[in-house]
Image (cartoon, rainbow, N blue to C red):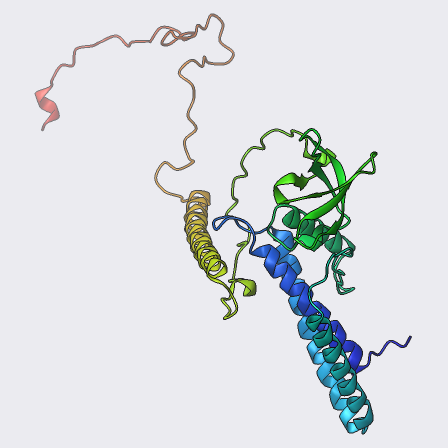
Length: 324
């Protein structure tokens, strides 16, 4: 297979990427109105958006090259193939709904994304399907716990198919019994990693770091096809994002003022000014004693010194002749 893809292949890839983007956007919109989606899902949405933009540019260039090369026949063949697919879809829709779904929807992801992305999306789809927040067919082939009708207890099971009524058809592990259970009779199987881990201490936000949120995500843009619940959730998340950006900017401004003041104080204290009695007098301790003197005692004034010598006082007689 050559490295260059035909316009038909690029168009098919673009269709798959858009379907996957819609699934990720649906996962982003799940949960409560105040709950913020996980960073992994947001990264997936951003990566898929970039891949779609790149694929659209490649498709545009490929169609331009095909037009310049005179590939009218290939374009006509593609159009007839699309017409056949559309006709087959119409016939399938006219035949009525499928009685039983036994194959989960195919998960096609661009090769540019990490290998763990598909697994994360698949786990999110299964949990959403088992909790009634996504189509039931997403859970086909997933391990779960289902209620056994004989005793009403939960047992490990595997979703095998979806019935006409939209219920899950499960097969119990180790027993082989098949039963049809509704949404209230099935739940995700707890994993081994979901044991008690204790409550982690809250992380203190470091203002020194770069802002986490710098712009409003594209997936929060309100579309005409959104229902009322989705619109309300997007509006609340938009308000939360804007509030987070505002507080981050306030923290950064406060941090800049604090750094400016600290640098000013540091620079002011480091400067040495020469002036009166500045670094010229060496202060001695009041408990120091003269060196080399015997009998000196700490705290005694004049310790180690001799008696003060006084000269004998003499009377001065004034001589008047001296004035002449």
